Amino acid sequence: MTNSGLCRNIRASLTSALLLLAASAACAQVNPVSWPPRDEGGLAANTTTMPADDAVLDIAPRELSLVFPNDVRLVKLTLRDETRAWVEINFRYNPRPRRNFVWELPELSPAVYYTADWAILSAREQLIRGSFSFAFGAGAQPPSLIREAEELFLQQRAGTDPDTRYVAPPPTRIIINRDPPRFDPPFTIDLDTEEPC
Image (cartoon, rainbow, N blue to C red; front, side, top):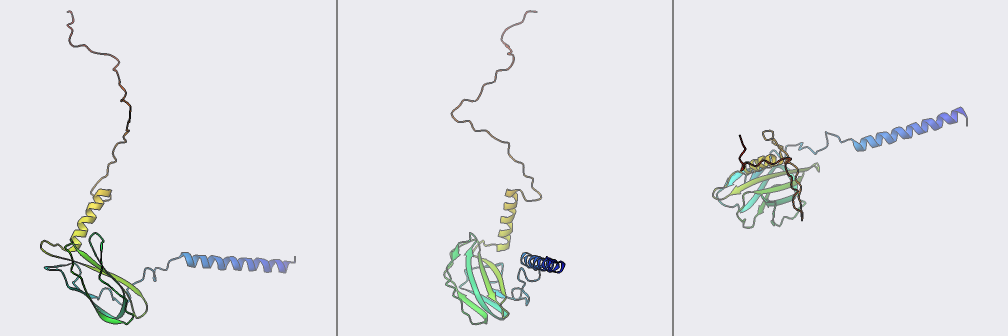
């Protein structure tokens, strides 16, 4: 093989290696500008819901309402209680873009709180997600307070709370079908006998 042929092979190999390296780096790298998807138009922040997020109502709402600042397509709407049990609301996707969405609710049973999760496709085909929570009835509290208390309890239980120190329990041995060993002291003291003086 001549020098020019060898140079051509090396150049082709290096070019292939560089292209492969660039392609793998592009696949492995997550672009912070595009992921996670940002709410570029402020659709989620400027959305009005009824009931409002963290609302405490006297009675159960009869409907959910979402008002977006622009025309969007609602692709997801779910309702669940604090135990994450789903409430069937018969949501069906409608491809027509709109700003206002109203969904009638079945009669809601008493629960600590409910959370509605929604997802939309913006005019630029951007998927945007959001949620809002509400509670109702006598003695109801804002859902944010309840979730905060639950989070604090879980942190303390798991030992991740900075104010709580977790101490591991001592190791234990379980003895089955065997009497524990007896240990005789190296000497015995008899306190009933009198000693002569």
